[in-house]
Length: 371
Ligand SMILES: [Zn+2]
Image 1: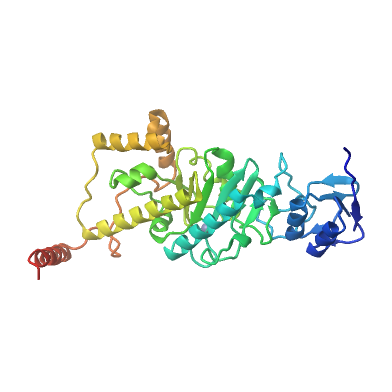
Image 2: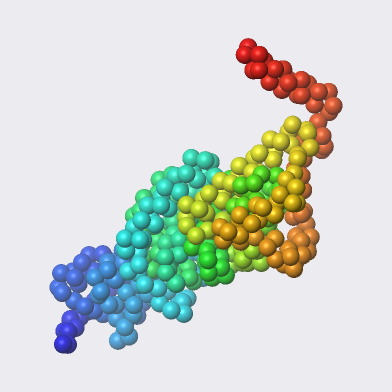
């Protein structure tokens, strides 16, 4: 059976807005003819895709999501515009499936967690989920992670072109996309600026290992990528040497990025790293050396980790050597025990240390005596 193709011609217009898309649907059209340089608003494009109405420019059929000049903010590279076409067309319908709706809600919940834990400030931080081979749902730019709603989300292809959603996607999406392209297991990325982990990132140091079991299992060795201007291609690519063997990377002078099999798990890694860095700093203030988990016991933790299917560069001894060598090439990125954070250069004066030990001992004794 042959279905009839009804076209609406608006090639005399420079803009295709939501009302035009709605008129096309009301008229029962299956195609909308537009001029070569017509700007299609994201909501109109989304609406047309949802209703299987094709966009045709200058006699050439376009996927509804690929207009020639989308009305959206441009990133510092790969404009997010229609010029950069991805190899296989992204499917905007994936933006409205029950799975997508659930992911959008999960992203909002994770956004609120990030804000409430003070891992993001202002409009900082961004979250993404790879819902298809060439489709990624992500947070918009210029919205606080506390205020996110499912309607704020964007859908982009792997080149960063926005294919659905009314708000412009985050300008830092390219960092996430590099990870999705490099690591097929990565389904979700969370980028944020938690203060204690970022403190490591601004000193160029990574936290030492073998101090707390959860950190070994969920994260393990952390890498640090060199500084580049956020939003640029160079910035996005700084993580590439590390992401296959690390699920968490410190971004020098910036923050962190974590990837996982779900948005919730990626946020867990941010929590684990932040708490770990914070605990190390608190321990450093005590002025007493940290005790480490023995190498022998650490093998148990790596075994648990392997069972969970989590990546760790320590699984491969040859690559572990590579990792150590590349660490040495980045100044200051070798694991170091943190120094006290009292503004001094070394250990606190002995008198302070004695006073601290005495006050802690007194408090413990008082508690034991039920005072
Ligand atoms: Zn950032």
